[in-house]
Length: 155
Image (cartoon, rainbow, N blue to C red; front, side):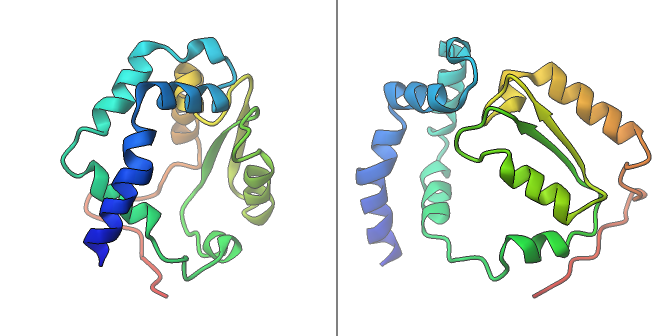
């Protein structure tokens, strides 16, 4: 049953993953500057795990079925402008994936930030914000008016 699986996920993964030492260790694996993993960052992540729906969200991700579309099919279906800000030093999702997106979606704007790892928005928030602001103010801004929405292509 889904409830039974959720209980297993909670005992095996959830309770271990949300320990302060585990969170700190995982962040140090993916941050370019290990010293930037401070108590405030660890505490903010731990606070999120206290939300009443946090375990349900984690279990839903862990139990999610395989996507109907593969990576390339999803990229081919994109109809919106794309800004990809990538951490050049990301050891988990290496820049090859972002570069693959750029090759597949030639109109996308692709930026690699260094030194940043898996979480450039945490490691270099000012650089990420500057990149986003410049991109939004460029010709790539989303051409929607209030009340409009992108058409969703159903599978």
